[in-house]
View 1 (tube, rainbow, N blue to C red):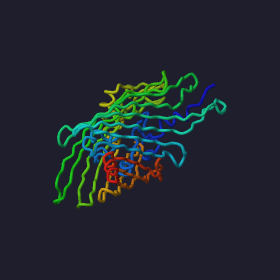
View 2 (cartoon, rainbow, N blue to C red; view 1 turned 30 degrees about the vertical axis):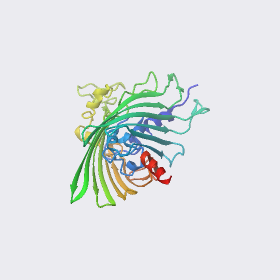
View 3 (tube, rainbow, N blue to C red; view 1 turned 90 degrees about the vertical axis):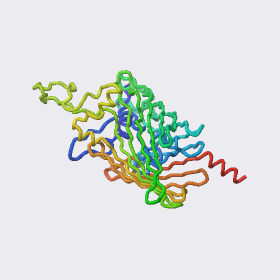
View 4 (tube, rainbow, N blue to C red; view 1 turned 180 degrees about the vertical axis):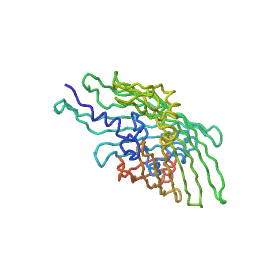
Length: 403
């Protein structure tokens, strides 16, 4: 029997895609599409409360997602972090993303790190052509990372991470004559991080810059006959300013920009249109009117992504998203955070404010975040997220002091 896989394929392509959030009322929506978009979701509540900014903020146990190079500057011998994010909680109760991250410093200059992210897409029922239930399945996606970070100078660090990605959306079910399979890919992150202590208004401060090109990897396909699609290759650039106001109070301001380094969908002629050479289109064959061919190799796609938007340079600028964040710490024990995320209307129209708090005590840090969308709805709207992290040295010291 022919099983219906439309729902699960929809989840794969659009669940976390920009197209889910809205479209431009004054122009044509032309959002970039990739598979496994769960790789772009902020996994931790600290960055989640700062408008999804994190490439240049101070290092923490969740730096693997934002900038692996930051681990070279992290304090402590090692640590572990766990986070949990309900997804689309206002619509369905069983879609969520869990994240586990950790690091270990084996000398003053070198740190190894790793992470695991698991995305559950809930229960999906497969039926035949008549709507009769065939089988229930829980589609899932996950990725596993291993990274290495090293101090290059007193102020500069570099990092690299390798990633295996697995996406099983159909459980091997078939749709008609198309046999499905889990999608797999391998990828890498390349990152740098620079920080410099400065003085401003006679107060201690620091300035940091970060860059991370993530998910540099092979395309992914869910069947032998299906065309492979790009994973979300992404470029993050950012800066952060930190200042100690006094012995107990310090603040941070940060800005991130992000751009997907994958092809922008071109505009195609429709049947009845006249091409530039005067030919009338009479078939459904895809003929590009504006833009460039998206079916290119990985290296070509990365460089082409800066010049392939059918709307020209103006549309290329629209593909950049902006994250603004602020953080206040009191006595390194209590934090308050806020942020804002902005995406152009024609690329998904995600616009939202974020807020959150953090508490640190005896090696434990608990962070919370809350998202307030400005346009339509967001999968995390009115959802409280939390992250928990442990510092190995602080836990050991706390244990020794008690004994």
